[in-house]
Length: 97
View 1 (cartoon, one colour):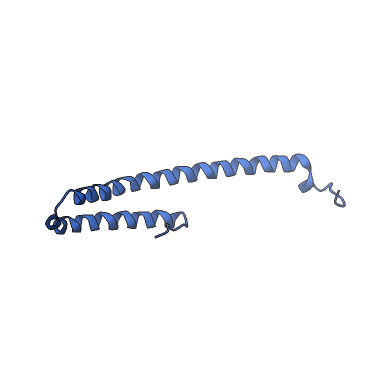
View 2 (cartoon, rainbow, N blue to C red):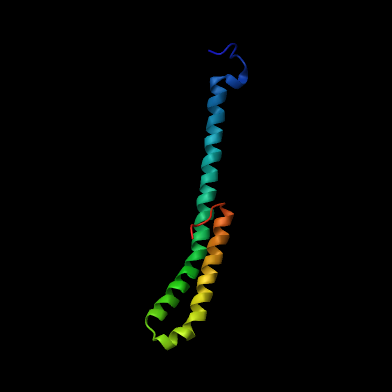
């Protein structure tokens, strides 16, 4: 034992109660983060699909048609990339290029 542990902050029951409260707070925070991450991912899905659709169109076209589709693909790509970077910034992480 460390010296006089009669001090309330070292009381076992008090510490157990504080630990329980902290565990509840951590669980609530994790739940909120999971919800926020899920919402961010859902917001990115349509943009990812748009970029994939444009790429699929591109694969099925001739070289001449490429010039017509290129601006749409570039726009879809830029939107996806911008949204992904914004989402990552909100969670303080950056995707690797």
